[in-house]
Amino acid sequence: MRVFLGLAEIAGYYRGLKEGFQALGHEAELITLSGNPFGYAGTTDNSLVDFWRWLNARPEPSLRALRRVPRTLLFLWAASRFDLFVFSFGTSLLPGFRDLPLLKRLGKKLIFQFHGSDSRPPYLDGSVMAKDRGRSIASAIALTHEKKQNLRIIERYADAVVNSDPAAQLLERPFI
Image (cartoon, rainbow, N blue to C red; front, side, top):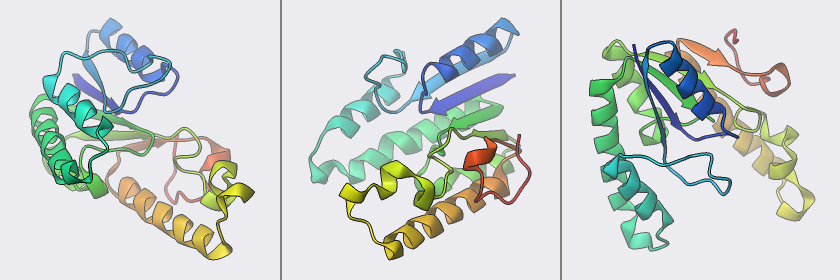
């Protein structure tokens, strides 16, 4: 089995998962699209990912449209190479989770691993609703609605969802 892990690394979790898959004899690759101050993301031999990271670090608004190109190419590369996709922290290869129906049509298995704030309702998330952020109840409702829509898309296409009970209030399907 060929396993894609990404697009975010959390405290070395996915690096360890990659090593575990490899120890079991599976090909596994961890792709992260942003660096990590603690070096968890590691390095990659993928020039497309390196280009994406470089683009993502650039502040120029004029580069915004160009950021879609490497992600689209990364999607095409990954879809042709991997059988199982393990997505971390509510990410996927294309914006708006547009890759999920395509990956399912191609017969790929999809697993989503959540880590807390990526699935927790915003009104229960202190980093989102901290007093110094100045958010209103209306903005909390809007953020919760947006997160719920994203989770609904993920649940529709995922073969499995991994989450913890305290952060899973917005999920509708059973999860691991």
